[in-house]
Image (tube, rainbow, N blue to C red):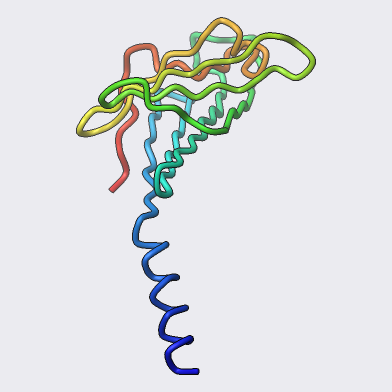
Length: 133
């Protein structure tokens, strides 16, 4: 019984030891973007969300929130691609994630407008989301 309990605890501890989650954040005026990357063994998942309130130069625009999440694929050193299929269509939203030592930069495909409309977007427009430590 003690051996089984010890083995179960060891397996649980080893499984959690290989899991990691990193958070990145960019606040640009009233625009907030958040990126969460979770690595569990060889599986990588990513979630990008945007909460935009209009900045003073965006008078007349409406606030919006958008999110895209799913499995991310490594396509190179420090580069991931998150793809989210648009339901009922043959197209997908792709978000390229360029990781740096201190953060990440995001680029979205044109199809991401399906998920992020109006002033919302997943692209960071060359600005870096800062890694939260």
